[in-house]
Image (cartoon, rainbow, N blue to C red; front, side):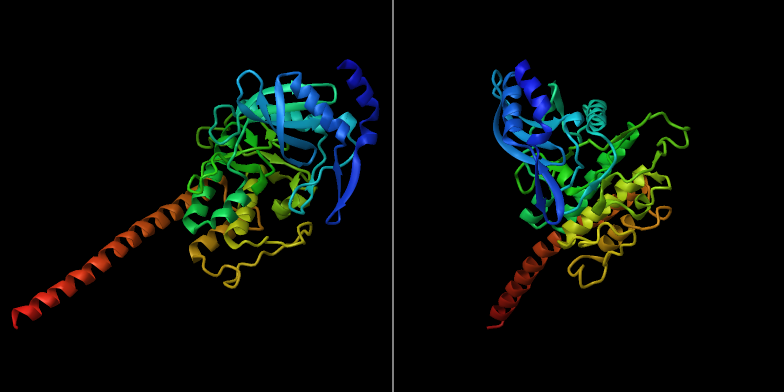
Length: 363
């Protein structure tokens, strides 16, 4: 194994193949690196069953432990000294950041360790290291990501808002522990079950997460406000203030904007900015033509989350409170509609029966 590592250390960069996809420069790992993943995981009793997906610098495999026969997701990331290219995101939008791979790995592992026990964070079982790659062995989430769930089941407004409520609750719980995700997008939200009626979800991919000291400023302000700067995240889901590298911005409001973009996408089926995701000034379309069939309250809520002025955009508590209010009203309306649908036919049949009785009485 040691000789294999020495050989690959000198040749890994040459084994990276450059491909072009939708005008974006992308890179794929060669077969020799994939074989290294297979052998390295097998040496720790994890055997690759299939490839789940890839993105950025990582490949994710479905693996089975030899002794327990339990299945896990193994995220394989090649160390930064073997890489000399930039990360690209999924869905035609480039992920832009200036962090090296080892820094991302450290942040991801630290964030997941802090969030162990949080019901909205994927569980990290262990970390397997080699000189070339690091493998994060995590629980396997089989329900697919948010986009898959949304377009597979044709989400109702109530289900979409319920999912949004979970997402905001998750981000709030992360923030309270000093974790800011910074890459909120549908691909990073996974569901636990393939059942169409099961909307329990968890966040994955904390590679761009900001880990801060969760100490409170005061009793009156229990949630510490954290600022950052720099172009970090997936451009399609970033608010306007992030594109100005000279200014600091609030991390919680960056994530809230990303939630708004996701909600726009799953409620309309349209990406709000099309191909202009890298432009500083972007105006999403909230006209009735695009939002046909959706209620005004839900549309205004998404517009509220996507406020271009960061000072006017809600904080996490404000966004969650409004989301839960809308969810409550939608659930109440659903109950009343159900009662109405039950009573109206019964009332009609009752009146019809009375008319028959009355007519026979006078015969």
